[in-house]
Image (cartoon, rainbow, N blue to C red; front, side, top):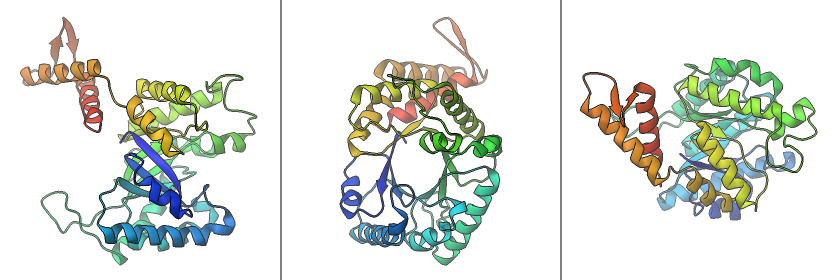
Length: 301
């Protein structure tokens, strides 16, 4: 995945429009995008939409639902509404570590037994399909203490995203960007990096936070290219117009793809050795992993 688009769950128009966005993942949002007074209405509209999509047999991106945080007391109501539709995954906001993933996994397992859906992946077609989890892992100061807990926490974990806006409010930061620029202030640069390292340690994609400027294509391109350069696999979006920009900036260019293909070929030619040489330089396993990641990203274009 390169792009993940957040879509308000209580807006039938935006739900319908999201299917044409070109985003690799759609995240139907029952949390921040829906006011407290409209939570139930949001659930009703989303379930109606998901049922219509299923009935029409439409080919869609991966469909995820962002539920309300575990501390709100609304998570189970969100899951009870949407799990009969069996979305591909759930986005957990304000995740604080392995205990939160364990609790959400237990909830999901119960709903999966109530609403079974078999997986077509692998040789055993009767295997129960697992609902994936993308955790937003930096929205509170407390969550930073749990960043080293995600490795091996659950096979459901499919990605880790960092968030800046909620964190700003939690720590009392007046801003998270340098004055007059789009650069993160020092505390938020640190948090971004910590998420990147934690996701790498957990073996899942690191997802860059949403851009808050909707119409600034230049800033979004720069921000996304920096994320791709640093090792993020994908970036979140809050408007359909941001998706093409993110997809393009998250796709490796021709020269990078050519380098990756040559690295893979070099290792294939020296499979019994475990290392390779190319252009007079020694290559080892990290280079091969990077090359495979680049090719996989290019294939999404």
